[in-house]
Structures are given as structure tokens and as C-alpha cells.
Image 1 (spheres, rainbow, N blue to C red):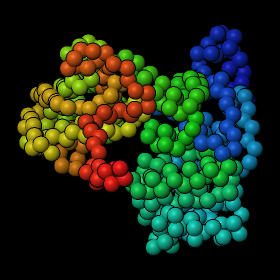
Image 2: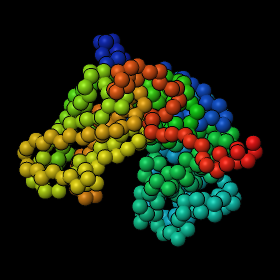
Image 3: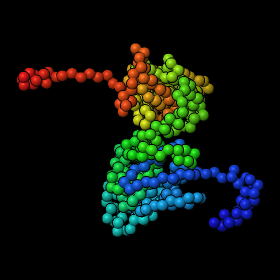
Image 4: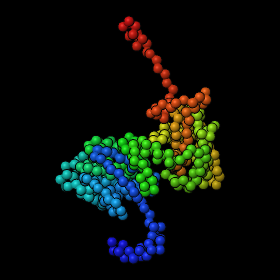
Length: 400
């Protein structure tokens, strides 16, 4: 407040010169929505869209520059791993400390303490200072405290990615129970599968503005479609944001999607992709991996070269091309995403999620005929057949 008061004359001077508007960056603007009791709401968007800022405003950590927030009930928030934990205190002491910060009374914490520890699976280490905890143990204990608060509103930022798969499923189940118990849940995530499984409604935020407020499926499809507005045949990924690995020893440069037609692969057509990468060091054990996802972010298949005994011997400073072929993809018409990685053993040198996208068109590659896709049929169309079993035939003969 003191700094703002001292700077006020200078801001007025800048406003008179017409430069005040350029000096402002709106993290959120014109974002309005309501959340009802028992509703689980997904907040999705690209990095820097304003999702975490929204949760900080709702949890009263950040004061909004304009507008207002009306909260009817007690708020439990889990915004960052270990927020409100003191590293020199034990897990037991931090449960009481963090619970108090969240607004729980001491008697309430004492009553729920055993359930909190059991859910976090940390009974053996509950009297160990949390500075000796791993990030996953931090997250498990912090989530357990927040989830057991008898508040009406639960705010959860992208923290579930820290835990292992089993605990992630446990957390999602707990959040579903919270929603069914009549509490409102706001869930910020980049995990589209978790959002689709957990939420009924989705908010899409882009550049600080509310782009879409609709069903979670529609919000996810719009988000992924805008992330890759149009299918292309060549994807320059040299400057793309890395999810894992820094590309220092090997770096992905380009991905080519190789359909026979410009509008994508036909139904039943073999998938072909060419991956170009640059080796920054000489190695004899470099492997390439790829993952195939649908529009909701569900992983459909993985293709790792070590499974077929394929590796690339590389020399520093040279570019290399490798090609991935999937002879029988069994993909229904729709849009799909390809993730690519470079690795050796358990070390990943470069990882790009949803690095390229492609379409499968509703035209049969064998006949060239167009067919109407089945709504809600899912991404895969597997070969199958129906037949009446001999036992059923015998039973029918006996009844006759």
C-alpha cells in the first residue's frame, strides 16, 4: 500500500502521456462464472492463460484489481505441493499446522487425524520432519489434509502429477466423493483424461479471458483443437516447449506426417511418420519413442523402438531421420495427436507431448467410399465377429 501510494503520482503522469495502458498486463479480465454445490468444474488452458491466478484469487491469496468474488462456504485449497508446511516440523505437527491454516479447529483435526494419515499412507513416517520427505510424500500429506476439510469449496491446482499412478487414482476417487458429497470442486489440470473422468463442466481460459464455458467434453475438444488449429503435414518442433529433457544430448527438430492425401489418412490406411532429430553427442544406444492420443488426451498406444530392437548410432553434430509405420491402426475417423521422445535406458533426452496432429477421414482406404461415422463409438474400431455358440444351439434345439 505504501509503495502504491508513493507511485500514484507517477502513474497519473504516465496516464496523461498515454502510456499507462501499455504498462499493464491483465492476467485475468472479464472472467465471470458460477459454480453450484456438488459441481466438479475443470479449468483448462495453456500455460500462462491465468488458471493458477484464478485459483489464487478464489483462495484469497491475491486481491483482484477489479471485480469481486462471492464465496458461500469455507474454502480448502491445494495450490502448490507443501504450501503451508514447515520443513523442520514433523508430518504430525504439519497436519495440525496446515489444518489450522485451512481453517480447521484443533478438535476437528484430532478427530480426523487417523483418516488423514491413512489416506496419505504415511503412518510409518508421520513423526519424521517433512524436510526428509520426497515431493510425492509432501503432496500426499498436503492433499489428504485439504481433502478431509469439511469445507464447501475445494480448489485443486495441477498437483496430482507429482504422485504415482495408484495415488493419482486414489485422489481422483476422493475428489469424486467430495463432489458427490455436495461440495464444489474447481480442478485445474493439463490431464485431459482426468478432467473428462472427474468433471461435468469445463472452463476454457485463454490469454486471461474466458473462452468457453460448456460441458467438459466440448471444452477439451475446443482446447485441443485450438492448440493445433489445423492439421499440417510438417511440424517444426525445434523451438517447442520441452516437457521433459532439455534436448542437450539429442534434440527433436521436425516431424512429418505422411498420408497419401493432403486431408489426412483414410480409414484403414497405414500410418507413417518421419522424425528428424539432431545428435549433440556421440552415442550407440539412442532409442526413439512415440505415443498416440485421442482428442480427449487418452493414450491409445505407445511405440518404443527398443521393443523391436531398433536403436540409432549417432555422432555429435549430425541430423538423423527415422520413420515410424503402423500397418493396421484401427482408428475411427477423428483427430489424433502424436507425442515423441528420445531416450537411452531410463534417461529421456527430449520429450514433446502432442508434438504433431493428424486426421483420419471417414473414407475407406480399401473401397474409396465415404461412410457415416458412428457417434460416440470411441477412437478404436477393432476387428470382431459375433457367433452363436454350440451350447446355445443345443439349448435352442432342446426347447424346440
